[in-house]
Length: 209
Image (cartoon, rainbow, N blue to C red):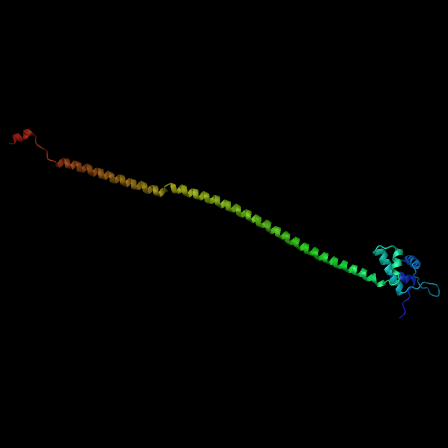
């Protein structure tokens, strides 16, 4: 199969450089031993191999930092595989893409962890506030319970109004009973005195004889 032929303008568009750059690259490659064919009118005719050589030259120069002359000597050297440059670059791009995807996944994972941590901190803060509220309520209940117990103890030590009334009533009843007993005893003493016979004196006994 015959190789395709390209003019300088078409070749520049395919390689992605200006026509002036093409002439510069052609001159450097010519110094290193690579000659671009010409037609019967002495116009350059670039082939697919020329495209591969130029792309390898540009890759080594711009992407790998080699000087143009050094890169030209590499690409025109016998046994150099032109496809060893482009596939390596493609592999680097693929690795870069994989690295970017891995970094994006890692960033998403980190973001998810940060969100979970924020939610966890919010829950901890809420739980802490609830614990503080419960402790405050517990202290209030303790104070109220202590006040209530103190009040009950004071009430237990003091007789109730009803109890006091019952004591007063019992005391009145006891007083009434004592008054009755005292009156009965007084009446009984009086009656005993009245019934006791009066002893006659000695003169009365003598006169009655």
